[in-house]
Length: 251
Image (cartoon, rainbow, N blue to C red; front, side, top):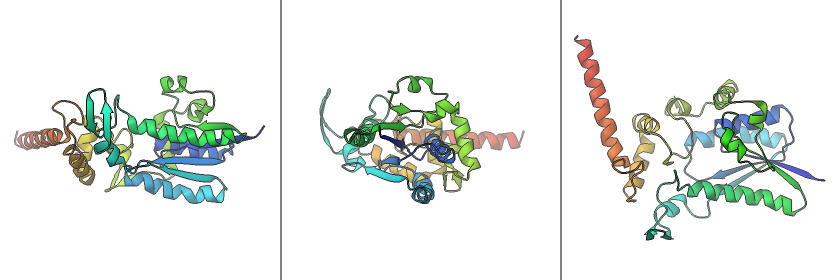
């Protein structure tokens, strides 16, 4: 029986560490697949470009998928007949409305099915760490979580990548020092700490978030927490912190 192994990567810490370990250990690996939303941090593309020569040297096929339509079209312009009536665009992706994630998974699964239909037994490596048990429990048999098998947690994945020279640097910062997850920069699942760090340290992305917010009625983080609201909040917090520092100097 012919077998075909595909590693699904996002070029974030978990899937990258998984890929590096698979290659280091000589595990069967025929293809690496990446779904590019077009909304990734530049550091993600930099990591990809750093690894691609190694894949080529090892004869591992690399396949990159792209959205059928621009991500922002689906987010802001696509005609949608939803539960609450007609509207334009799906708005922010995140929470219960993970439409971007669903589209990504459909494409990656369709790629695997293509080989299965050709007579292969297909296995997909997925970068789910050992400290994500609920996600591991939901995996179908044809999807393998090497990190869980190795007993590697998320923090170990990050350190393992750092040890191998992968740091996700932008604007002088390692993104994982600012963000819990280096997912799409417009992901509504980002918490307030992450969003404040984007506002302070990655202003070019913050400006893009504000521009999206101006074109959708749905606040990024819920009522009273649009990107514009959050900017005012962060600015006030920082001003207050600076004032407290000054007071401390004179007491």
